[in-house]
Image (cartoon, rainbow, N blue to C red; front, side, top):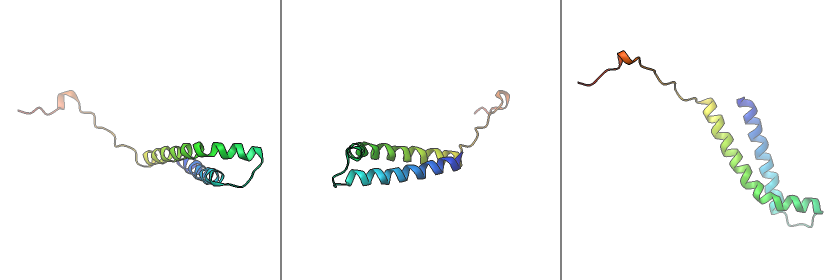
Length: 80
């Protein structure tokens, strides 16, 4: 699962580069590319959020939280 997430994050980074390229392009383009260029600015924000969420998920998978110890009720130390 971690490898799949890392590959997806690499693809998201590639898409971010492509979207940034289209967002900053100023040449006359066919109407299809013009539509993509208009949608590329919001796509940049969404891709950045996807990368951050993906990195957090990968971190949590690689570093799981330690298991909490369950104390029996008759063994709980009481102060006093």
